[in-house]
Amino acid sequence: MAYNNEEFDWDDEIQEDSQFILLEPGDYDFTVTNFERGVSKAGNKKATLSLDVTDGVRSTKITDDISLLKTAEWKISEFFRSVGLKKHGEKLKMRWNDCVGLSGRCTVSIREYDKKDGSTGKINNIDTYLDPVSTPSTDEVPW
Image 1 (tube, rainbow, N blue to C red):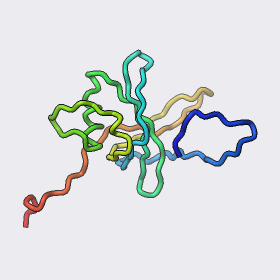
Image 2 (image 1 turned 45 degrees about the vertical axis):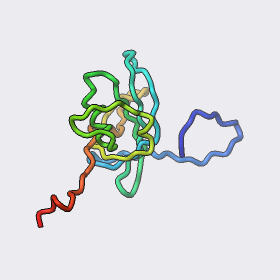
Image 3 (image 1 turned 180 degrees about the horizontal axis):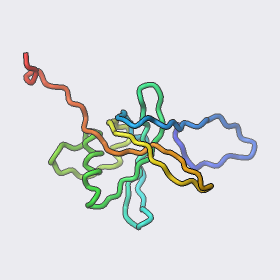
Image 4 (image 1 turned 60 degrees about the vertical axis):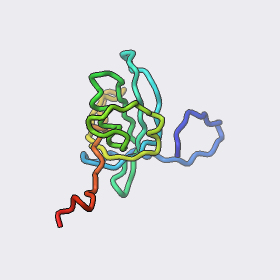
């Protein structure tokens, strides 16, 4: 189900339950479900990616913000390589809108944060985007 900011009427019916699952740290498949252009608290451009991350049985939503800063160029490259739009060492014009629907792999960790009530919460965090797994061509097979 796509999430949006539509408002309920007081007597509307509801159905959707929480889809949050705290994943164990590790490598997972993901599909990009949404992309939004935004601005960080520091005033820098950022890409906000909504990812459907799965362990093969269950899936959960993870949001990842990528700053469009030269210091984060490595992460931008990682992401575009992961979804198959960039190769190592090549230049690429960032086509963020083309990423929705594409899939890749990422490494997920658990990040702790302070909740408004003062307690500590845990959330899934994207550490790195992984290169696609390539299958060897027939002339690369050693037999």
